[in-house]
Image (tube, rainbow, N blue to C red; front, top):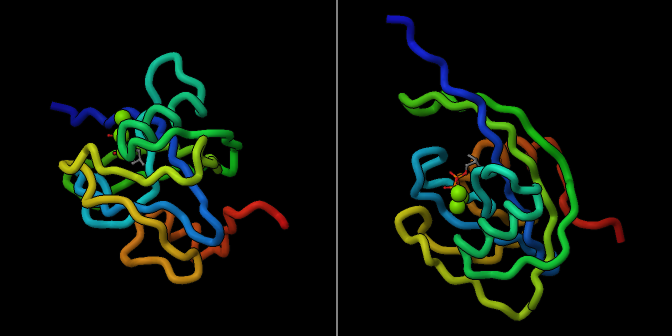
Length: 144
Ligand SMILES: CC(C)CCOP(=O)(O)OP(=O)(O)O
Ligand SMILES: [Mg+2]
Ligand SMILES: [Mg+2]
Ligand SMILES: [Mg+2]
């Protein structure tokens, strides 16, 4: 029987920045298990990128997203698990509605917890797509 190829899916992830730090959490999910990743997830039917980002941020961290703007997009096939998958990932830069809000971890089955990490001293290992962006010199911070 012909193996059916998985359908490409869309993810929306957020660079939530605080000074020179970025919000990262260590994943427990199937893709990128145990790597440090940005908050975000699957685009759901009818959502804008911003609506998806705000929903996923709230679901995953309890944080309320404020203004967000588009940064970049990647297109990647993940072969690191027996379950191959293909994602178009949209990267937004977002600020918090309340910069003093503290991230929670309402999905402990998917993430070890969230913290702020200095962009110049990121934890390892990073989620593969983020790692490739960092190595290529990508800068998520607004031009000063
Ligand atoms: C980032 C990319 C793999 C898209 C899927 O992200 P995710 O596994 O965090 O998805 P959910 O947050 O929607 O469960
Ligand atoms: Mg999610
Ligand atoms: Mg997610
Ligand atoms: Mg989701």
